[in-house]
Amino acid sequence: DSPHRRIKVMTPASFWPLLAGIASQEQAERMAHHAENASELGGIVPFPSVARNSPYFEPDGEYWRGGVWLPTAYMAIKALERYGFCKLANRLAEQIVMHQFRTWKEFEPHTIWEAYSPTRPAPSSGKYNSTVPHAKPDFCGWSALGPVNLLIENLLGIRADGVGHTVRWQLHQTCRHGIRDLQFGGISASLLYDGEKTVVVETSAPFILEINSRRYAVGAGTNRIRL
Image (cartoon, rainbow, N blue to C red; front, side):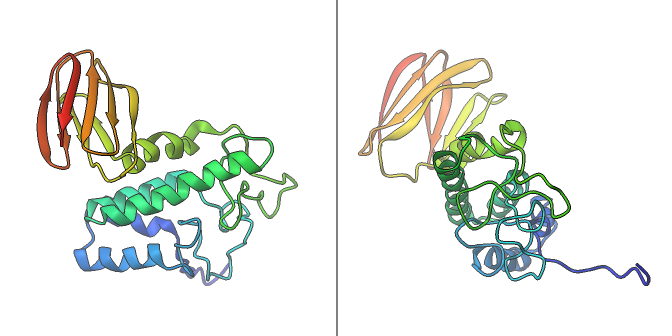
């Protein structure tokens, strides 16, 4: 309505300038604080679609009035990474993935949802002007960014470069973990860390494995790397 003034609302969309690389380091640090602030974009489930202290925030999500959407959460996490906030990005990613897991486990039907409640293990409630009670079920379109991309890239710390035949592993988990049949650049590889000092790699072809900035040339077959 007239006079057509913009309404300023804090949302994860504010991380787009960071992903584009046009924010200063000082601006990125301020955004990192917003991502951690439990009364804004942080909390038990980070990156609600509007800040928790906004008058538009609805505890059950109500779609874009507080619902947690994987596209914007993923974008914000990658934006923080670009400015060096990797530990924070990994922690927020784990909170998101675990929230998806709890929702899958505790809410029926057990599935992946279009958007999630920012306060409890449940999907986001539907739009305020709709009779549909929840966001859409069986929605792997973008919500699979959690149990696929965030799980591999942030929780496990594994990034594959198919063009360069390189895998970079930010090894930050201390338990036994890894991935089987990772496909990249025509290569199939399985990587396992034993939780102590050894990484076992089984690969169909040679590639470069970078573990915490140290590079190893692995050959086809089974390779054991002592860290």
